[in-house]
Length: 149
View 1 (tube, helix red, strand yellow):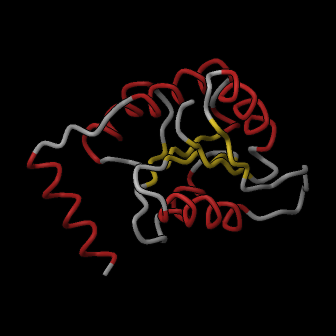
View 2 (cartoon, rainbow, N blue to C red; view 1 turned 60 degrees about the vertical axis):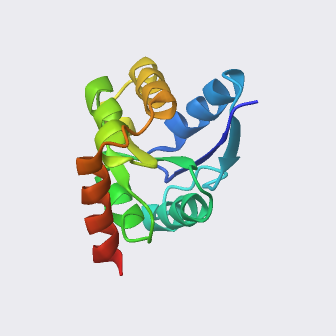
């Protein structure tokens, strides 16, 4: 069995979240849905960003996925939680670099700007890529952690 993936979305990302939950389960991942559990037109993305970010922040090497219309709001909200490095990503190269260079632990996607197949590829790239552990990247992440303090 592969690692756990925390996932969350507001109404504007709900459809893609549901698709990715099924996709990831078929890939052998354990998916922890942090909401919204049902489609609610008037829900707010910071609620789900907080849930996913707090879950990821508590577990070493955990990964999360957040989805709204454009991914921006989710990224902003998630990055307020200590220990989280959320990356708004819309292509494979950025998904890979987000992990290799910045050790991103949450992937943010915009349902309104990506199709399901693209999302699947980006998610798999994000989940299967490892941090480079290069000294320069470790140094930069330590500086980010100082900003959190």
